[in-house]
Image (cartoon, rainbow, N blue to C red; front, side, top):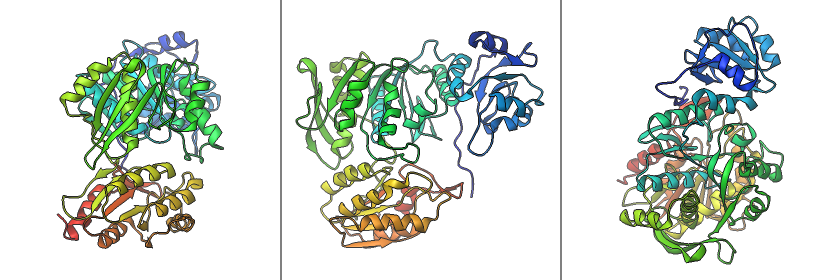
Length: 515
């Protein structure tokens, strides 16, 4: 077993700034001498420490970061930013200590200053919502490339700087990492960046110090109620993105009722879009053709402006995400006609979405799709899309996250059962929960379905579960393995164990005799 923590991308040629300059800029004072102290980076983690860093000690779930001040100094930290409690813990560290009431709240602006990310920033696009954030971000990045721009991406799956790609740690990185990433992008001449913005990122100050040119809202459905008291609190966290301190313009999907609430409460100019027939929106998405290889759609906007193109994925929701990305570009100043020409030249939108209804099977035998969806609404849309192109039976394989929102598990089980002919329930990331207990709740949810599958199996571990599903499948059947998607590990008792659902599915198909 091993730790699969991905690296943090930083500028390769950082420009140091003086600690005295930081204190003057933000009206702060320091304990200890600041003479000659130069800061070239900032971090919350001793594991990501570089010589010349400002180490930020915040109160964590299990301990206070400032208790590692001596370790930070030994690793090359030249100063510490912390709160009054942390200052006491770091008193004997031997390097200057800057005290603020809340280091997390100060982190974004200070990181922006250290990394100079407000100087000649790229076009910044931010997308929030329960589902569709990742798809919209990848599709937006793909279109930017087709328009000839050097682009960047920060998503649940990956961070991109032009052609450089690394696996992500969090949906939205900590503010210090976000600004370091943008500084690295500036070195690489990136002109536009698509950022996936989670509710937690907004609640925990991870996008502080950024002003997005265009932000978007996809939808809201049951998720993350382990972090938020109820759906209203979850919604209010998302709504914070539509404030003038965070964004200049917004695009809002009206495909869920929450979208209209964003429009009513937003304090920035808003444009609306919908793929739902009969909904009154400024931009309308019409699905023209759905095939296993693509979904074709027409986007029509104000003054009769129109564009017809296709996205190389299945499902109306993917077309809706693609159209949302296009309108975000229009709101940023790109001409719809120019976008249309670029897409026509390539036969549609060119974008690879790792682990999003990703077909990992060959031309013969059952179709196997690996998907990252892990909410009831994601199950509903993806199952419907897979079923549409399945002449045989639809087999659903999934598990649920441990130590995450447990309140959605019954509904996940119910929807999975209702939309499948055969259901296989297995494990995902148990973390510190008992895997068998998680599976039991999913089985209880499946029993609530109005439509009961022909078979319901409980198989652990997932290596055995995918083989059980493939053993039941024949030519013309489809298997949807929901949950793991692009991830290359499983979290078991806090350890990230190497694991790839895509590789496991392909191996199981070969073992079963399918090329």
